[in-house]
Amino acid sequence: MNVAWLPLTALAASLLAAVIIFVLPEASRWMRTRINLLAAVIKISLVALMVTLVARGEEAVFSFQVVGNIDFVLRADALGVMFAGLSSLLWLCTTIYAIGYLEGTANRKRFFGFFSLCVASTLGIALAGNLFTFLIFYEMLTLSTYPLVVHSGTDKALNAGRIYLRYTLTAGVVLLLGTVLLYSLTGDHSFASERGLGGYLVDHRSLLTFIFALLVGGFAVKAAMVPLHGWLPRAMVAPAPVSALLHAVAVVKAGAFGILRIIYDLYGIELSVELGVTTVLAVAASVTIIYGSIRAIAQQELKPRLAFSTISQVSYIVLGVSLVGPFGTIGALAHLLHQGIMKVTLFFCAGIYAEELGIHRIDEMDGAGKRMPLTSLAFTVGAFGMIGLPPVAGFITKWYLGIGAIQADMYWVVAVLVSSSALNALYFLPIVHRLWFRVGPAHGNGSWPKDQRLGRLETHGWLLWPAVFTAVLSIAAGALAGLPFSPLDWATRVAEGEYL
Image 1 (cartoon, rainbow, N blue to C red):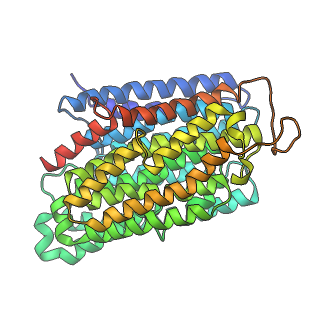
Image 2 (tube, helix red, strand yellow; image 1 turned 90 degrees about the vertical axis):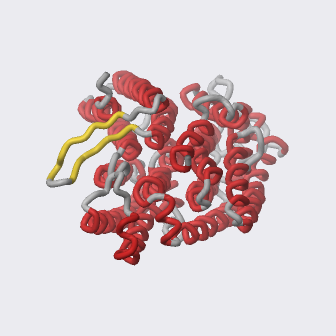
Image 3 (cartoon, helix red, strand yellow; image 1 turned 180 degrees about the vertical axis):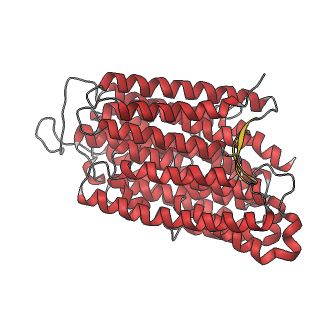
């Protein structure tokens, strides 16, 4: 069976949805909703086919020559379909959420059109078979997320958008320079190259190290690693669905995924260790983890606190890669999925609090658990997962990273993990306490900034059920981690391909 069409068709589902949405009139609400949901379901189905294919030990590859020896390549391999699975599932959840969140607002056509382009870019990043193809979709992601960040059109949003572009476009230039230098040296930039870069070590050690620094530095901007993280907290001015997309599915995850590709599929583990770059990465990731957590504690608004939490949490992926061992790799790869599921839950809940009760600050959350029990339960699950409490998925990540650190004789990393969990508890548990154990404002006295009470249990189903679903998924990913095709199982499959 010819399966080369699978990656291209999955990509086309999002691209075609974007084109149709841009063409439809603004008033075509139900048609736009159907197209969004249909495209998301088609994409999930195609990614599921690719997962089945890869599980059988096969790969689906689509390629064509662009110019000279430079090819455009889409490849469904184990690492790629893992990221593609995350983006396709959370795209569906975020689409459902966004439909309810943006009901009655202006410029929905523009929002959902660029939303689909953003998801297409993320899928292209997941399935890119070489650095050239990766770079195309990486820059496409920058351009398609900018209109989402500035969607509200306020001065604050426009300023955040300008800062976002400064960071990400500069990172793109750095990536392009690294890509050109690598191609000039090797004539190849494939993620599946059998030649590898080890043969260039003796004569070009310094150049290889410099290229590595350029590539990883470019990806570190979107991964929001310190000191390249400044754009992310400012981007929280965007609507809640965009925040969920930036933090859980697209931008920051694309940066972390790029670092994974560089170390595993371009340079390789052995060469990375020989160049001495993994220790530097481990230190940089650890600094980011602790810094992000400390800054999160100081935030008095909910979304900025979640933003600094993301800065900290995404660097667990980079830290796991830097441990150079199967357990560290499994922890890193599992966290790629676990963090996405848990973080999207938290941002869904933050959006519900803002829409239903007008809550933006943490000191406004007293008693909201009684008013919004399902939303608050979902938020609590996400918070416990970020701390690393069982049985939520975050516990699996920290357990494997801890074992990986001990196996690598990097005991200081264990101290970083313990400190990070303690800091996570310091900025999440007070919120949970306010939700469930503080007395909220008396009903009807207007003490909450906004309490719509339209006769529903707590909010519209379009908003509520995606948050509940991802919260359940966060528990299932931890409690059922030993089952086939769980995030942990798939991360183990990828790690075995690297080390066995």
